[in-house]
Length: 473
Ligand code: GLN
Image (cartoon, rainbow, N blue to C red):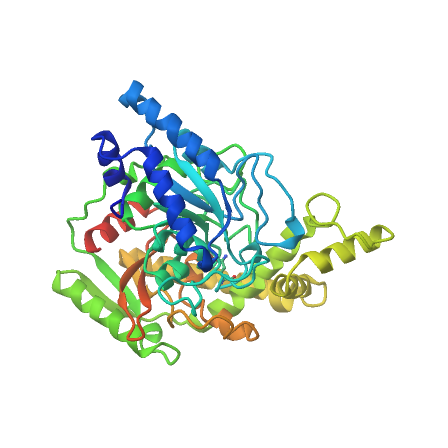
């Protein structure tokens, strides 16, 4: 079986009779089996995928024009996305045994286009983390070096694409969770504008930050998935009602782009030397192709991480209050009264990092500290947003490394959350501002690990961002 890197390739071969959906599914299932030790999948929908493949092969035979736009496209989904009749746990004990009563709007729209969902993949608990280690299922490993993390929180989505167990994987991105694992695993990770895709059926972490994103091997696939999932939805009042462009049909970029980068980011202290060199090499290549790349001043870089962690933990503490031992999943069997049901179920059900964030979020929202932390962080968010939008008024894109450091050893930062939080410095800005961003692979670190570069564009400029990305990778 060739390694397919786009839906176009798969569909050409299916339509030419070179392969069948059933063979494709068998191949991916064998890949999942062969790479089990990386711990990417928490559940495999083998029989269901086989049945669907069989039905699709039949559909193609009977009427080739009746097949959907994702015909033959096999995907995996992060364990925070609801898929009707299937378990969803956010990699947490607290949702043990919980089954989705409905599908996320994004998933529903993909299914209508004949996508095949092959399984549910691991992540950090409630999408909180940068390594895929904070999971009740244990850590997922990076296929480039299994002693290293794949990034997080959509780490297993990146691995699933990296090891060719599916064509595309759906992740979610609150502060970099699609882009950073994509960079760590050498695949493409794309996060749309906040509100471009409905959040209905996405288990909430930070509701003013969360967005579904796509991990793939080609920009083409990211564009088609966005086109299908985006757009208004009566179940999410925050989703944009703007018309959805045909992203997949406008992937050529024939102009010269004007790109900004922050000197404080690329020449800052915390950045790995190889990543710095690769990023500057990439900038040189862009200049050679006639694009303008200039350094601009961005004075708020140091404030991004503290503000992000105040705001997202505040939102998380509120969102996660619904897991009370009554309505969903785990209930403590030792509880003797209602107070104990709440306390013991939550104590037993949530992992360390989630508890840390619920406590931090409750603290920053408390009466005595609200003004000192929460409202101040909101003001910082406004400043960061205004300055970023101002820069994007003069430039097409902002360019940054996706991560200041390459994938690290499993276990290395688990007891040092602040250092781990700081590693999110380059990805969080796009979520603070709500703009689209993409991570593209640009080569390898001298230690052999993949490295990614990130491009951000103005709100709802996905078409431009995807077309440019397609032209340079
Ligand atoms: N690493 C970041 C965090 O832990 C981002 C997570 C995400 O985007 N879901 O919050």
